[in-house]
Image (cartoon, rainbow, N blue to C red; front, side, top):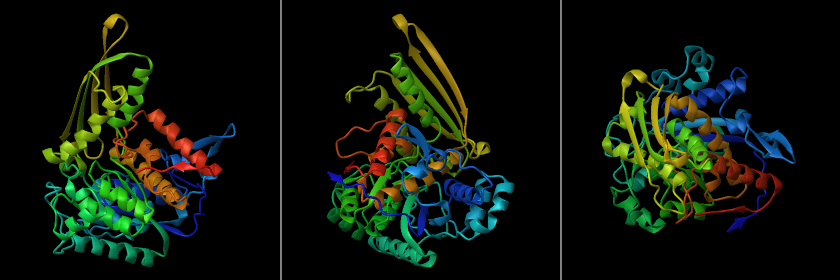
Length: 425
């Protein structure tokens, strides 16, 4: 199904709602505040420093398509802790005192709304700043009230949402997830298959707010959410932001495949000491993260949906001294001419939230662009940003970063030229 790519202007304030005001969300906010003051460069953000080749000339992306200005962004969100964004960012320990002091007043003004929280989905965290209702249907209504109140109080013309909360326990779509009707019935009876992140997504979709899922949760990746997104004319994207170790796999994997080298095994280990690492120490939460991490290489090296013939193992260990500065180890076993074996070793000392923050900004701006272009449903062209890109029903996701980048650029060129753009589930 196709829609015209006519794009409405990005006029007025754009509200960016972030469920989970932790390290990733506060790092993203602080970066925007610093960038619009001109005291720091938003490195890593395609929308801010990237270019797009049009007519044989590389042009800043914001000159090619009408993106919302950083000056027009208003931030809000929910969290299980009552700390304002400055206190949360200080606790996260990602940014320097110099950077936090420079935008402290702006961060302090962002105070979280009470969270929709059910501890059975995130067992390693507990917080006092939560809502209380008798049914999940009532919880959705409270979240919708929050969205309306934020829109009014901040004078926002448009809203987008990016999930920056914790990884939930592993869930797969069940009967309750198959249609809008079955999901609404499930909300009324407190179906255990409906997690907290799904409540946020449902509330946003009902309010016409585009939604991106930055975690491996089953947040908007099920038929009922696809149906509601189409009915409300809302774009959605996900899932699980592609940051450290998986980013390298989607860069190196296609390179090895392009040279027709063989792969016998890839072992990945992670040391992570932030709140995300603590949550992932729960085996059921790790299972959700593992599923998105394992699918990457299989998608790159598997041909026509067939299973790839190599071993792939991923481990994540919570190690508090590392904080947000994650350490990732990879050991790759490959072979070349006549089957002779080789090895590749990598040690990536990355910063999780520093890599994730520009993706949050890009997704907020590009989903807003998609809605102004009347695109709805799953936005496959945004798969560039995710470990496990959402696709149309029955379609196979693309994991090659360079193919993903070409698709992203092709869509943006099409929007700029007013050409029809594919819509999916």
